[in-house]
Amino acid sequence: MNILALCGSNRSHSSNHALLEAVRKLLPSGVTWSLFAINSLPFFAPDIQFAKELPPKVEELRQLALNADLILISTPEYAHGIPGILKNALEWLVAEESMQKPVAIIIGSPSGGEYVKQHLTETLKTMDLLPSDDLTIVVKTARHQISESGVVLGSKLRDELTGFAATICQRP
Ligand SMILES: Cc1cc2nc3c(=O)[nH]c(=O)nc-3n(C[C@H](O)[C@H](O)[C@H](O)COP(=O)(O)O)c2cc1C
Image (tube, rainbow, N blue to C red):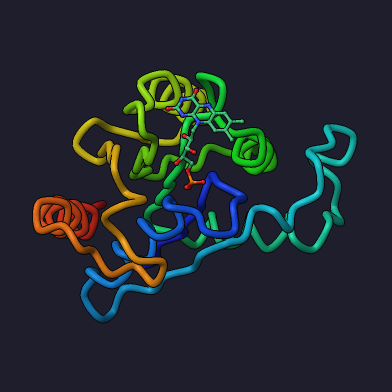
């Protein structure tokens, strides 16, 4: 199974990045994990969206997305919406052909991120991607419960992430 992981935070000590690390550590061997740094992408440019030669980082992201069995996004909420850096990455993935891939979502936001959850789900569905409630979790307190290397300190969160990792491995 190939998983493409995207982090919606550009912060150097991001709790969403730590959440992704924690999930990665809980996956069984045999799962291929690609964390793509979305801060390496140029700004989305509709003029070259369908060009034969794309910027190399855009090409890399598209290939990883095409080869992925599942896309995993962990993101905070910014101003009641999707962080710009993540929306930018998703815009590069708006392709003519339908990808129809499951997308698992971790919302790592202190308020619970109800707005970003709704906006992100709607955006992904519009892109013909397949988010679903059983592949979505909300973590309000990640900053205090996970070390930067992804070691989960709280047993309740560890159980939750263990269940989440098992669920995403059952897809597709
Ligand atoms: C510009 C900005 C806007 C934010 N807006 C929201 C918001 O609307 N709702 C919310 O729950 N948190 C908001 N936050 C707080 C972030 O969700 C919080 O800092 C989160 O832990 C960041 O995740 P990270 O540790 O992965 O960077 C905002 C933070 C920033 C920097």
